[in-house]
Image (cartoon, rainbow, N blue to C red; front, top):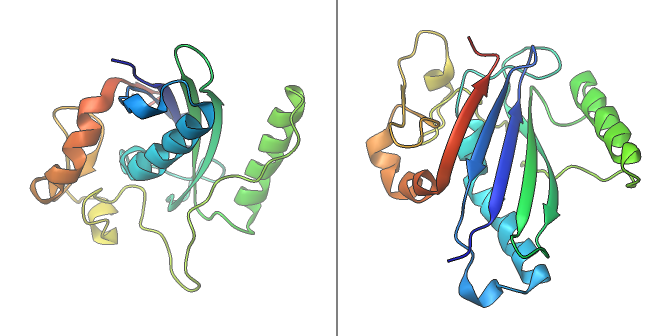
Length: 191
């Protein structure tokens, strides 16, 4: 049985971060197919991206305001005998046009230039005009803003020790697939 070696880093303010090792099982028909494996791995990231976002009372990595949006960057080596991918997720207050977003883009350009890569646009989920994403601190299941406000009681999944829920029972059918893939979770700077 072959698994993708997936490492995820989630960044918030004051050098706080979350480090997660996830091991999704690679479908048999994709083994040895680097292009197919890349597309599959990216689709997995988008399916479980909310499970990384809704984990903590995240503030914007740049300004500390409540985070609503995430910015994903990926590096992959899916052509290797043991396919590997690293995902960097930045929690930010707004993912377009503001100072925090521009600072993050400048960081990404600098990082890419250090390894000889051209500037690449970050991966973003489409957002309809006039809408806003839920607070990163809100419940993964219902994503209602009131569940992400101070004083609201939420539980953390006992299996993966990662995802925050108010309505875990209702979300279990979806979450249990992700939960089984989590190998390790390390909270850094959250003392």
